[in-house]
Length: 114
Figure (spheres, rainbow, N blue to C red):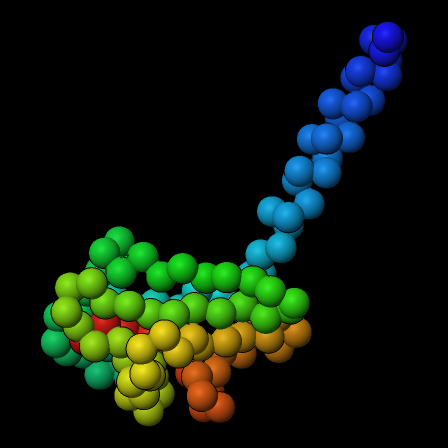
């Protein structure tokens, strides 16, 4: 039989182990969806899908964050600067060491569904 101390140590070690995966998050790579439709700061443009409807999902693996933008309201996934429109399923990536986002080799700092 386990003593009370052994049982407590077993529970604490299981809780500590289960917390490790949640520590792998995008910290230096800030979320960058923009629902203002004003990528250049020139005033309002066409209506964009709001953040709640787009709900971009960021993932983390081996020091790299990634996001694939889908537009459920029928907009076109667009990355700025450059008005880049990726092929379906192509992800923007960000190295946690630099905090800079890229899409197909081009630097991006803003994404929208327009």
